[in-house]
Length: 134
Image 1 (spheres, helix red, strand yellow):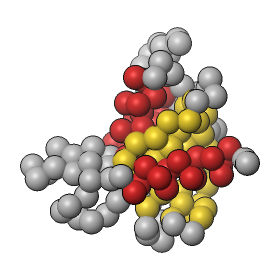
Image 2 (cartoon, rainbow, N blue to C red):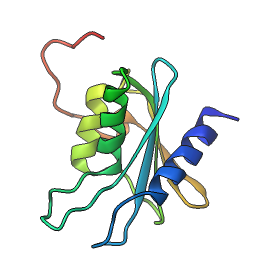
Image 3 (cartoon, rainbow, N blue to C red):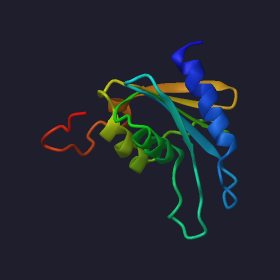
Image 4 (cartoon, one colour):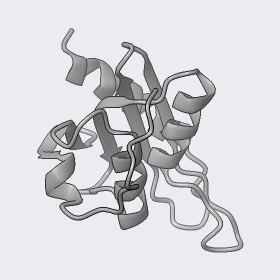
């Protein structure tokens, strides 16, 4: 099974657990960390918009909690033609990307829709003057 296939299945499973009673728009995300772990997250809505959590943010929180700090590959999955990460999530993914060329795959329930690099999704993101080491 390829890395994409593992991430796709994990993102799909995460999407099923999303809490989206207001929009009914469920999203799952899965990350492959630089140390080989696969972690996932789902969107969690809240009646006090915009206090919900995006799937990508949930996956990043799970990654950090699991002791990893760098992302090598991502799948974001929703039941939509094309659901790319929002602007805030693009910045969050960039913060933890192992490099600007990591692949961010956007998928729907049927499969891959499009693949972007981090640099393509966020060409001029905010960066610290000094990079933080692992």
